[in-house]
Image (cartoon, rainbow, N blue to C red):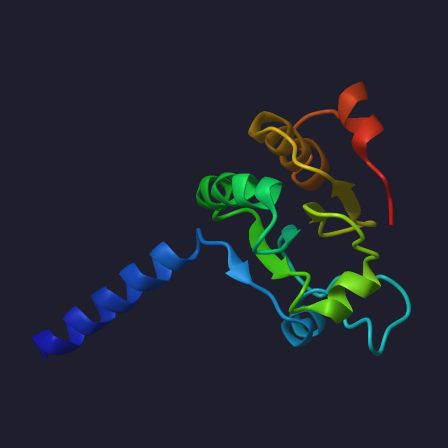
Length: 152
């Protein structure tokens, strides 16, 4: 009987620690959890939490600097926002769909409305501002944040 409680406790600890991680997203998992672009020609978000997707490659210097920021933010926002990463060289279909022609690029997906795609490496403070204002609606967007936003 005690072994059962220990197992349940360990599974709960593992699940709690996994919530704050940046997960790798494939074309197939994107279609199952974000938008099924293969079937639906309009943006029809399938999730229930905002999403941040970091498009990167393994050899990109700015991408390597962005990765630990995304790791930290995934822990900070673990109950509010889902964080994913997609290697543009392995997930060519996703890169093509979103017209990723330079890296890093980050896709911010709110639960309602259209996503935004931002090119380049932004400081952590700016990413926090975008998440708080655009994805979570915690503050009114500043003029600087509005100028960054480019709708897909």
